[in-house]
Image (cartoon, rainbow, N blue to C red; front, side, top):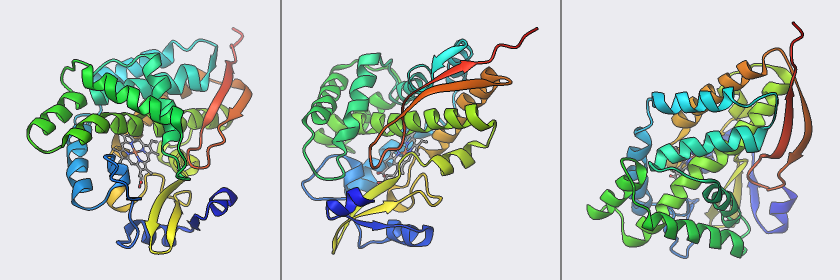
Length: 294
Ligand code: HEM
């Protein structure tokens, strides 16, 4: 919170005040500057791009069986010593993001996707590395041949006049980032909870962990950070997460498989946290599964 105040950003907290702020027409997501990202727009342009993304995400509802099988196989192969971020959360979130776009994504792609986080700079600074990563991914995706899935659907929406040229260039990265970053952070933190205290429902976990701690809005009195930590993990209002159904299904499958893999117990070592003021997550945490004496 101090971090926000230092940068002249007001903070809204408490569930009712946050719900009102998220629904307010006085507060916009658009900081000005004409970003092609739907996260940084409001009004007709936002509604138009969001409707295209909603259709793409609906392609994963219900959650595809092949994707479920791939996630379960990945978790079953974790072995007795693994890292919750590198070996569990990252490849699971990568598989789902890959299914959203409709193309395979390698480690270099995921590295750049993680680096773009800083590009959503809440303090309006210029993060050149983050911007370079986002730009690189946009160029790569614009040149990638794609089969059925989100990238092809975005190209079709552009051909049908539903997206302009800039939107076609950046929306694949925005979608990939939205599908990946919060899920990565959520799955790793939820895995840590499961390893420590045993089974809990996915909805309970996502509310308690709240991987996106704040969203930023701009009002007549300047920027405000609205807290999501009081029971609003997927936000609310015009920008509420359109992928929450997919995220919950992904969590059910991956965390269910992880709980089964951890069996009767494990030990967690070397837990390292990210320090980002908005995105709450782990850098790494090593899990050692107890081997039952027979
Ligand atoms: C646990 C996982 C997730 C959490 C906690 C989460 C949370 C959020 C939140 C809080 C927002 C609102 C941002 C704002 O109001 O400015 C958001 C937006 C968004 N999310 Fe998620 N999300 C998750 C997973 C996903 C997944 C898996 C997808 C895609 C399949 C997705 C797609 C999107 C998109 C496209 C937006 C932008 C919506 C807009 O600006 O209108 N999210 N998410």
